[in-house]
Length: 130
Image 1: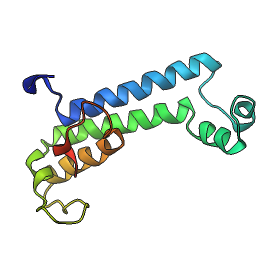
Image 2: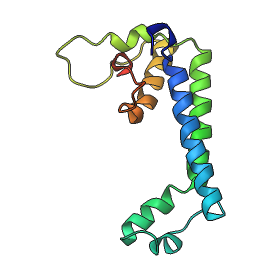
Image 3: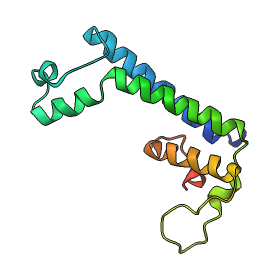
């Protein structure tokens, strides 16, 4: 993407959340319902632990998670996050976020932490790393 067409952190997160939601809805439609249980999944997965994991992340839970994350992103966006805060850690410091000093820095840090699970995505930018 050209630099002026690259998504902002909040746009990036909303797009990833929408992808997660779409996949959860598709999975629910494929099996016929949103709530899964491990017994139902054991037949299609090789180990009971895999089935338990899949059941724990059934579409109903993923959809609730997407809704909560989306509301968090929108709340952070409304506070006008200080995105310059994300690159403020001096080089050589351990890989943990600096403590925020106001609501704008806290909003930026919250968005950055929400984005970490998507760090392998091609649209993720390293300057978003907390």
